[in-house]
Image (cartoon, rainbow, N blue to C red):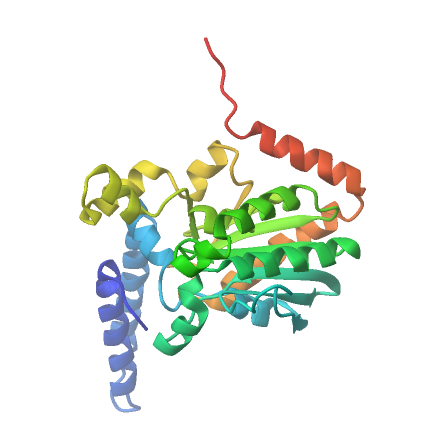
Length: 316
């Protein structure tokens, strides 16, 4: 497993415990030493993972072994039928979507998809969607709204693709139209930031009745590196920018930007993907059941009021 710098003491201790287990035999018992090291490991995990800096949590959100949209679909759903294309230009592999069934509830899942290796990352464009990706996403959401099927958006992108081709094909307009049209979808919309939530690329599928965020995911108007490059002319100041941006769930709830934090297994979703998927599934089912009795107009009115509340302030 890929290891972050601050995780190395944990990995070293885990390897030591594994070595002792392999060395043990019927004649020589190493169980007392193994138990001592396991207690030490548990304390070390708590000390490291419960006191992470904002920058360390950004690194967790970007961990190469962290579950992606297709991983959550595989672990949460009973059925999934992927749908392709924006009916205008192409099929964007960085944005996937389709009908799914979660414990008997039909939903439309739309989300960013990254790759696991160089070849797949090139194919998925590192999770940075093109205009056709956002047009595909809203096409599928409109289809879901037609049949009153809840929409689940899984957000995990450093940002929308900024290349010349994307700009020529209307990247900014595609995102703007998604913001407009998602406000008017006559069905329940739930957005979850599962990893990176960067800039307009994240917001392009982020307008929802309920906005959730995984414990170590982040949601920000700009990446820490981009912010540091603008403010301090150096991306090396990214840890300082991550602290200033207030991009994690605890601060986002205070700003009324997100509604709920979904807890992750100790150390992050990559250390127990199924445990993270179970927590996400439970949160989604709760909201789907809760909103099932609301009329389309009630959903639209509540969504409008939710976004009106963001950024409220009082002048003294």
